[in-house]
Image 1 (tube, rainbow, N blue to C red):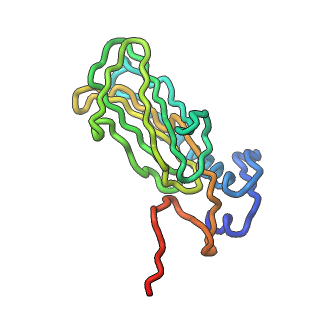
Image 2 (image 1 turned 135 degrees about the horizontal axis):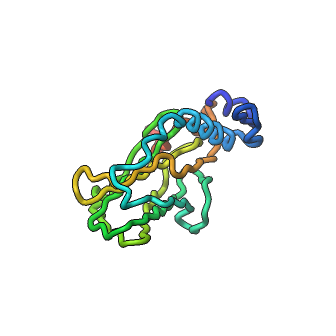
Image 3 (image 1 turned 30 degrees about the vertical axis):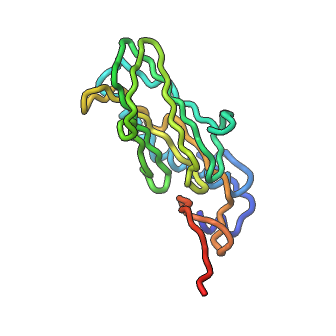
Length: 196
């Protein structure tokens, strides 16, 4: 992708012989990542649920955490809010959630476990929702996928697991491999100083 970003202002992405994107290169790279990831995941989607169907992840919505607008396109440094909706047939106390972020090219980038932040929650019968805010996301141009798992209070009590339940794109800043911009997967916080 580095070469495409270096030489192209416009990108066309094909999937199964059909044009799925025609536009600027940053968005084109993100769409291409989505196409590649979907093709790699087709065989692995059989592992969708845990050992119990008393709890179901019914959906995940994604929005800009600042203006609360639903979107799947962000810029590096934006804050993202994920809302996980959960349905249950019974009260589950001290539930836990794990969210994993993956990329098409690198696989698992990181995960967030609610117990790490000392966050446990109860799932009431019918519907519950929890939110995870990722502030100042350090990811650069590409497509990213979200996996969500819900666990009960017991150590290995997987209640439901959804792979690639939602995805988002980072569409800027534009990649530049000629020394005038950014490229790669992560934006590392940094500063420059002149030493005399």
